Amino acid sequence: MIDILYFAWVRERIGVPREQVATDAATVAELIEELKAREERYALAFSDLRALRVAVDQELTDFDASLAGAREVAFFPPMTGG
Image: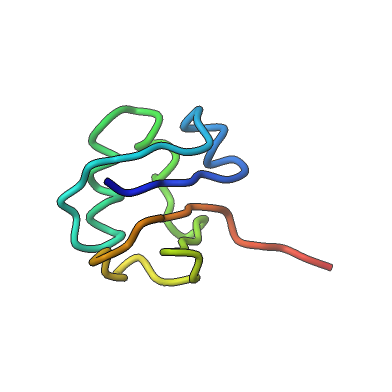
């Protein structure tokens, strides 16, 4: 099982702030494909990966990052600041 956290508009589109998922995905990209296949709300949330960032075990990473040994994946929009 892996904990998945959703933040900001990603959470709003999916409808939950976090969930535990059993997955065979080897990478973040594979996990996203599994999630998109679940329901329309996931497909909508992950429709434009350019608008998303991901962290694996609280480290910012890319979508091709390995999930081997990972306990947590977080999805969120890019940070803006001023």
